[in-house]
Length: 70
Image (cartoon, rainbow, N blue to C red; front, side, top):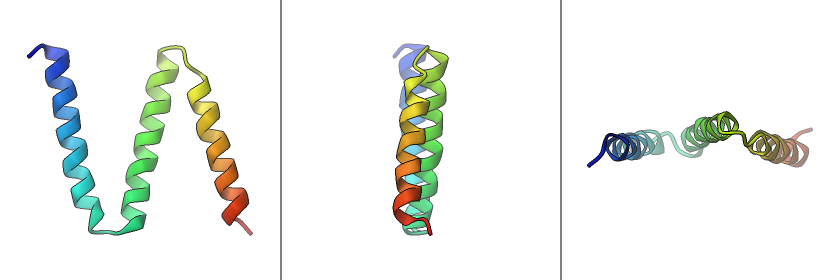
């Protein structure tokens, strides 16, 4: 296994363990987990030149707030 493959494997293992831990907190824990993951994805993609990832996340959050906001 290469260093990059090992890193990806470890990240997947950590994500699975974290998901199992927060699942006990119900939907709020899972939502917080997905929020962290969404920001990481957008940050990583932006670092690779894809600014659209932040725009997509912002649009989704805007729609969510419009739907559930007062």
